[in-house]
Length: 260
Image (cartoon, rainbow, N blue to C red; front, side, top):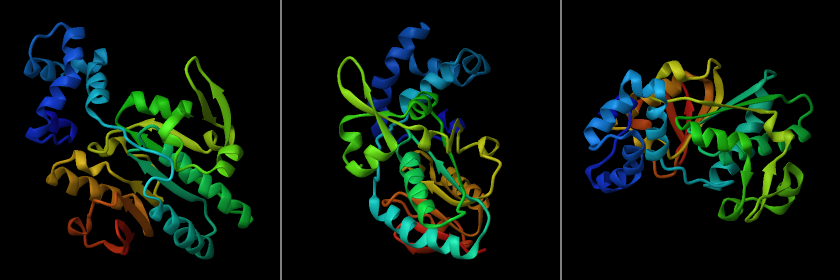
């Protein structure tokens, strides 16, 4: 049933699914999982917001700043100089499956730092996720604890401001970052949810694991269609996608360049 959302959940995940959805069953007054999922996927479930609640519960959002940093090093040292040498247009990048925003803010910090060394360099960042709840967290841009482990003090002081709540001292993304990112809700299984732009780079990391093989093939090819010739696709370090398309060439582990 969840295949309508492009979501693949292995049988071993049944216990996890049950534990995450039990409170939604209680809230909706439905007494068994099949009836609940049918309701959440129905037009009525969409209208009442129950489908979005189910999506928020089922999707895992583990992320941090500069996660899998070797990819950001390649992005900073290879991709951006290559673009600046060959283009005069605005650099466009999409964080697809952005979770709570750490990836998008990391990208924007790198772009802004690069801008200081390249006069006239312009960029736009778009970021999407299937979960409305995490997109709202990304827009708020408030972080603390383990999320900050990959963020060095220099960038923290430059791009974030102190934020205090009742429990912990946290930080919040400043306007220099927030003004450059457009966060929206979007399901990668539905091409109608994709941004209208064509992109120089797409980051889609640790998101494809949610799709079965057929859906993954479709998503990967849809992403490739949104990349300009010579642009790049970054996926998670545990993911490979070269088997899905002849239009990309692997440049580094989990980094692909569009060649056709």
